[in-house]
Amino acid sequence: MACCGSKPRVKLLRTTAFRPEYGWHDTCRPGTPARQVQWLFYRNGQFVCSTAYGAPTDPLAIGSGSNYSWLNATDADIVSFLIGQGVTTDTGDFIQVRVRIRNCDNERAISNPIGLIAPDVSATCTCSFVRAYDNRQTGTNPVPPVGFTPVGGQLFFVNGLLAEIPLTDPLINDDELLWLTLSGGCEDSFATASTTGATGNVTVPGGFITAVPDSTRWIVTRNGIIQSGFGFSFGTTLVPSVPSEPEDEWTFIGLTGGDCSLITVPVSGSATGSSINLPSEYSAANASKFIPVRGGLLMYESAGSESGYTISGSTLVPDVPFDQEEIWLIAIE
Image (cartoon, rainbow, N blue to C red; front, side):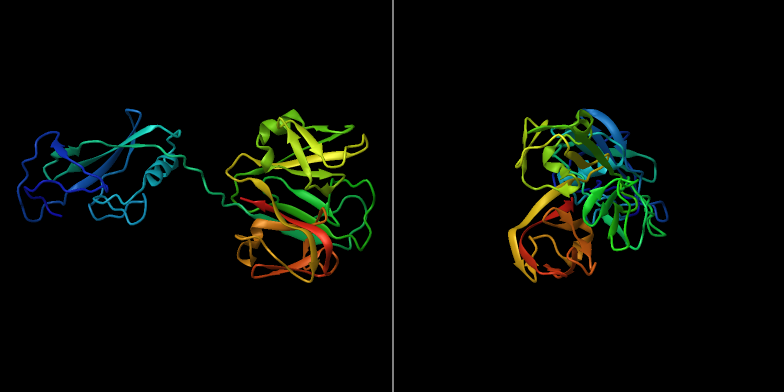
């Protein structure tokens, strides 16, 4: 848009009124530079950031289909943009947006502010599980397959049971091994803590509660077996369905440091037959986001044994039919 004497026109899906900063007297002059537009952002009355000047029709990475003279963005889009620029925002902050226009004579006009209350903008988890399988290993120090690179730590399973390396008992050739880590670029890390010696209820290690404060986002194992039937008292005491005995080892697993969480998703309390339907939102299309658990044991993709499975669409197909077993998913979200 070439310089001319008309008023600036910019739209934010709300009413914007402009006032001149240093006058606005430009006239049409062929060959002169086009007007440029800049967006300014304020948080609780303080300026926090701005876009660079751009041509009115240049694309702007805020919302969908925005350009410098058309900000097609919701309140959440605007707050997400600010977060991406390193601006810390809290739900309820007062956010204001202004537009400044500069013409070929370097004269400027700025809009009145448009205000919004910052909504709760929850980041989307982009992480997923990465699994590596092996067998035919012996000894107490199994080695992951070539090419396996831990991201944010790793978990290790033997025949579906959570285990620690070095192992207490040596492996035999038929043992099925699984290394579990997170996808590349994931900002989360596994947080784990173990405790023994509890009778009845189990006190959760304090450091783990600090790392992963939400008890609905914990995976719990008992002697390596993944648990489903337990509760919490005041978020600090685990109440198992079967009271703990002093020799039991309890391990708590969660994610920390990023935007993702581990959750338990029930599938069936007594699955039978050669297939079972997965809960909504879980299918072959996002299979890297979840792992089935069969009677407390982590299942293995097409392992050819009682723990093996495949997924067809939204159907889970075990290598060995289910026989009135409890099935659930460990999912990352």
